Image (cartoon, rainbow, N blue to C red; front, top):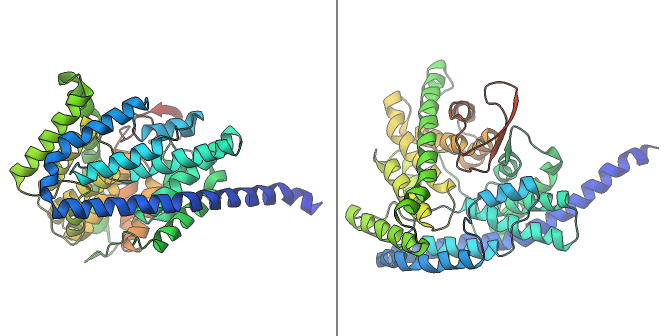
Length: 412
């Protein structure tokens, strides 16, 4: 009798453990190679700054490939459509987003990698589930496992990767049935990345304030500022493609124009700080050093890049913007610059993605538990105050941010 009651749970657990392991084993090496490719081309661009002048031409094959594949958008929104509606992403999404993101980083476009990782992992494992003749619901579970494994392999935050995958598509509702497989897939992806010699992103905060009412008030003020910044970021990134399309109808001319603008701005500024992911500037901000205008320039470069038709993620640029803004504004509030940079980085990510739980886990994994109560306060406040704005127009807010009311509202 006891076995009959336990049998469904045991069978399901074994089934999804096996499927999650499969997803992690498949996606872990692919995500790791993707991360290594981005590191290689970034080093190459740094050693040869003249590559930025090839960016206008480098965008042409990207536009051509996406048009030939009938994927005119090619954004992370495709992941949310796949999760919500059961329409799996085409398998061609994986090589397209991998190659196009590598091209953007090689020639100096301003883009991240995590959004690309979500498409990379989700498209492969979703189709893998379909090839195994799994049900539509199980294929969606496989898609989530692939997303978690790829995010963990590329960025090195497996717990945040698993929670983000569960939280991001439909804010307010988490499908806990997918918790075990997503965690397993993320941990395996993270482990395999380690075998490839990819170190996880980790930061040490130079100074962490005590948890006092004053520190809490300072954190709340900074979080409110990050909520405002998130609205600006989302509006700018959403508006950029429309501005390009209004003045330049031809997609090939758009990507060339965007490449010319980015190359010209880089030459005008005399620095490559705003090209690629900008990891060096991000690290300096956490150390307490950033110029006050860095956040605005990074937003401009990212809007010019993604709006023109180049591909890549939005999350690392958001980290950059949040960290540099926090580093500049935090001391005005009495917070240590480095700690404020960390708060700003995570709070802006939270406000832009509407994922407070994943943001807290990111803070735990990136900063090793330092100042977590204040990070949690910043994330929850930024989430509430950012309203119904977000990076992803296909994301849905299922429950109101201000009261326990079902609203099923799409962003955008």
